[in-house]
Image (cartoon, rainbow, N blue to C red; front, top):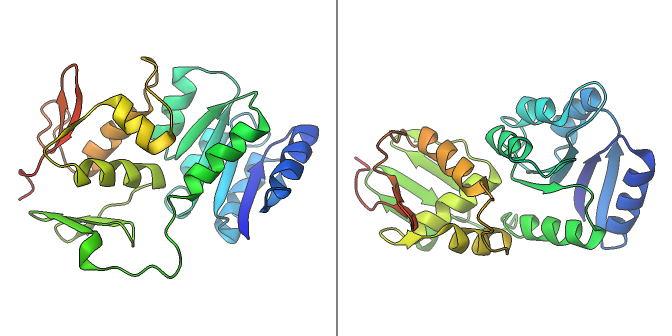
Length: 232
């Protein structure tokens, strides 16, 4: 059964959320404090963490920053306000997705299922058909790994999904609407900056010049293009 750690200090809300998710075949544990959530996430390695921003002890941003390098599962952040700052900061710290509170339980469940579908099955093995190679850059869908030369690239779940999507359409421009529809099942509303934030993080990890990117290019007014070249 999929294991979820819900980090939420509102006891009533946490209980109702856990009950609803449990009825949908998800095993949910509750942690009310940020300063103790960090140790639990690293020790238990749940499949997915639902992480509230406003927490006693440590806020959700601090927890996300602290665990991201050692926790390989999915982090879904809950923001109390639908503000760009909270959302972009969470993504920059390594969260895989965010959702603004208050959120309908069925919407939360749908978002969780969408995120979990991206995780590889334990039995999946690497093979040539699921690998893409461009010069010294290599990415594998089944093992969800990417490397540049001899250096492995540390990617969050959401970063890997975006990078794979771009690389599998190398040489073609993908709009923000294309990317959001594929990754999150929603269209671009003209305000969502999650794709831009992840592109910025990917460029840093791929040693792409942020002022004049050549590996993940911005096509003004159209979207983003993963280059087939410039990987040597």
